[in-house]
Length: 501
Image 1: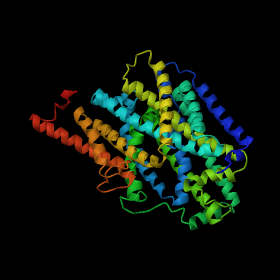
Image 2: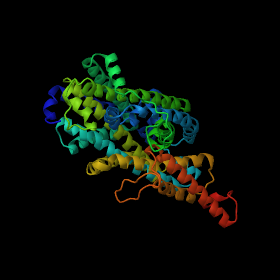
Image 3: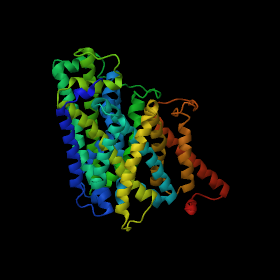
Image 4: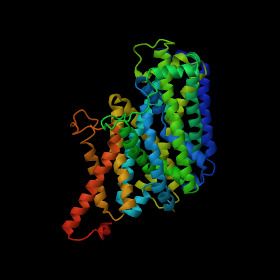
């Protein structure tokens, strides 16, 4: 994408600057009424469920989706749409098991329930694992789009990272959770309209919607269902439709970003409505951006409307199209959409991390009048750490995706296990749970290759979609084994197993 900065016109810059200004204004507007910690962190528990539902999917859909989903279809097909089967399963499980329990707890954090059921060390360890995982993810989600934005705008990667971070941290610090929700609504709208705009442009230049769809189908780009049971392939019904459900349950049920949004609704019914809405919107977003990938294949390969240089890699096709094929103004709108997705992910992450730090790591009492001031400081600190993580990611480009997939399974499975034990085996010893957390991580290494060149090879490599289920099962087996062994050694039953407290 040589000389991309020359193709990004004054009109495109005007659209982008207008979007960034609108984002800041919404953040300032949303800051009204943030007089307490509860208002700052969950909007006082009175947020409209429709806005929360949009925010849930805006949080899930990152700039990586915007850029990665089209690249995946351009290179392969739409088989990852089978993830939506797992998402549907997770909606029922989370709606029945997780949301009612969180609502009854009256807490503003996901992990407070773990202290009430087990102990404060379990709560803090869970929060620490979550914070490490989310910080890693934040760095990757901030670096990925910045790499593309730097090429399109003709600025350094570091500059693109800093602009995204400064704007997101400012409105999140100032407006808190309300700012995150309402900017998510705007950002999702920009994001979704950006995908529609690309499809409209491609269809107009390839003979219309019907001809574009026929050419994509003939090229095999619309294949989406593979009824295979091969666990080593992520593109099968078993891996993408069933195993992936555990990752969705872990994220929707245990991730502070999601739980925070459930708690911001008026009641359980409203929270479940927001959850269902997010799934429906998630299906629409997935279909839209997979079709963007199919449309790009038709544009550059099937119809060959314009040449695609051989130096352009699969992940660069969409950015190349944005810079070279979109009209003035449209380029600015799509770049704004990329920024929208990146800032939505970042603002949600630092707001949730601030909540987790104050509630679950510091464990400050709810009547502490300094909580709100500290929450703002936590927001700024996590924003700065997110930038550092992005800079670190920039220096480790080759292993980014592999690292992200490995660490997601490493942390999310054991965290899900903690909540399942809290729901169904609440008298489990806290020390057994802590041993299980690390045991589940060790078991994962037997089936999923760690992202280190010096690490061992797995005994039986499974597709990455299995990682959360593997670490969950490993954690559960270790917990039960340790508990049973201690009961046998102590010569007593499990009934008083909470005595260590």
